[in-house]
Amino acid sequence: MLDYKKPIPVPSDESKPYWAGLKERRLLIPRCDDCAKHWFPPSLYCPHCGSGKWRWAEASGKGRVFSFVVYHRVYHPGFAEEVPYAVAVIELAEGPRMISNISGIPTDRIVCDMPVEIDYVDITDEMTIPKFRPAGA
Ligand SMILES: [Zn+2]
Image (cartoon, rainbow, N blue to C red):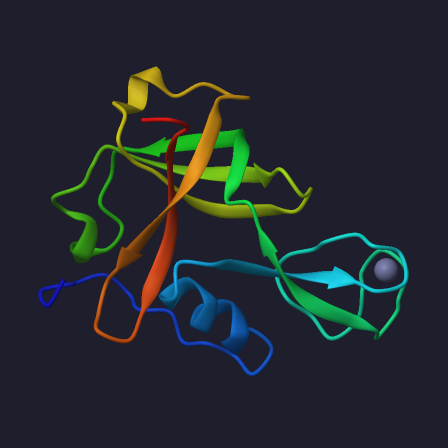
């Protein structure tokens, strides 16, 4: 953790509660008070109905692989020891899609629609990032 060499996310004002939630092992995403839909990434207005009335809601952390690619080439020196690795679009059970990595499974065994669950990874003392692993693994 102290030797983390990859880029470290810089929270925006809109996303600070999301990052604070990850630190507490909670996946917080916006949920609209008017249409009840969730979305991601965070924004000031609901992308479904335009409402500005919403709150942070705790998501289940469960989802499915919507799509993925496997990186075989090193585009950043921090990833040199990880190739090949998967970058996936995860469709959360609540509906929104987020981009993350899939770990805990060889990349040639990852398939679309595979059930996954969140894995909270501390990369520094202050920052926790979400990754996903096969559900129940
Ligand atoms: Zn809405």
